[in-house]
Image 1 (tube, rainbow, N blue to C red):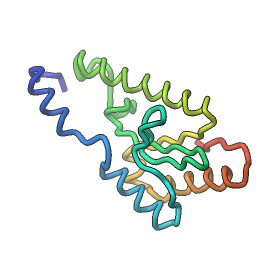
Image 2 (image 1 turned 180 degrees about the vertical axis):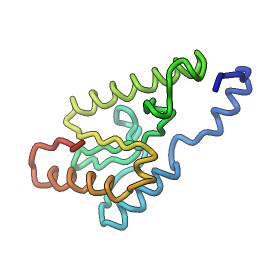
Image 3 (image 1 turned 180 degrees about the horizontal axis):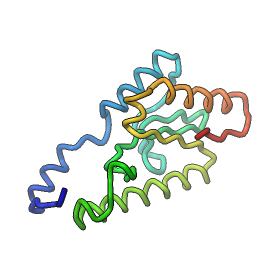
Image 4 (image 1 turned 90 degrees about the vertical axis):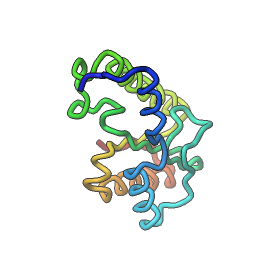
Length: 146
């Protein structure tokens, strides 16, 4: 998939892409709510990386990453999409790593889920969040599994 758009066409295309409230994110939020895992904040602007879902009191941040946009190896292959997209996705991947490190330096636990994992098995994702939240509530050192 080569990039064959003009800059103005690309700008219009990118403006239509949702960064919050995506279907996988909404599915995860609904499943968290049904499990009773509430009290989270959405799209938290004051934190590195702007987590999709965050429990400030427990210092747990959750991101739902789109496979293409965040560089999953099966969805994005460098050199196949054109120089513009290669550069953009590499920048996104680096930004994710920096956000994770900054949050961890602040004492936060970071959980990242691929959009397709949420779609395929949301219960597994909710189980991982639940485990981390329980450990944080109990005051144990928290390390996400996986």
